[in-house]
Amino acid sequence: MKDDPIVAEVRAIRDELAAQCGYDIKEIFRKLREQQVKSGLKYVCYPARRAATAEDVRERLDELSEKARK
Image 1 (cartoon, helix red, strand yellow):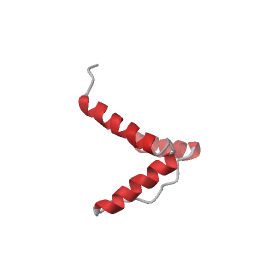
Image 2: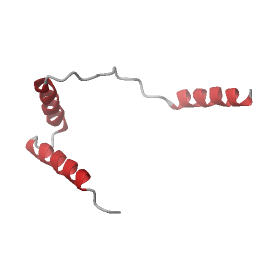
Image 3: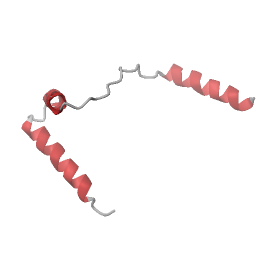
Image 4: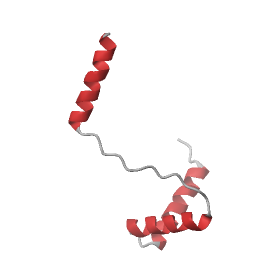
């Protein structure tokens, strides 16, 4: 696989940001949120969704199987 210069640039920027924040994930996100506010752009933020449980997945598969049989 050939090296992609865009991917390399994104990874370099990501590493630089992480290093500036001491590789502290909370600090990285705080800084990113601060940059969003300063940008003046409108960002879409969806509410968090509950993660599906194994039971949820089984129920959904059963629903889909039932539809496929009809």
